[in-house]
Length: 56
Image 1 (cartoon, rainbow, N blue to C red):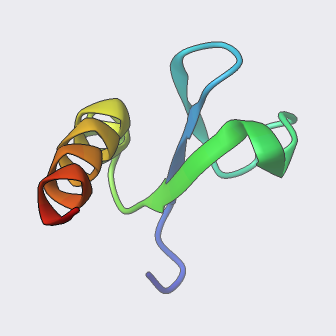
Image 2: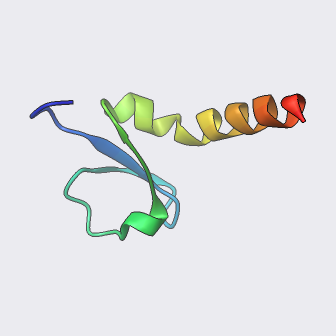
């Protein structure tokens, strides 16, 4: 990801936040390369959970 801005999805605030967020790591999903990608973090979690459940 280099020196480009990275983005996180904060589970506490349900918002996309920049890399320099004050929120603790335990509340964050990411990093994501774009703000748009971070905004879909919960969709990705849901999709992965469904895939893992299907494997069981």
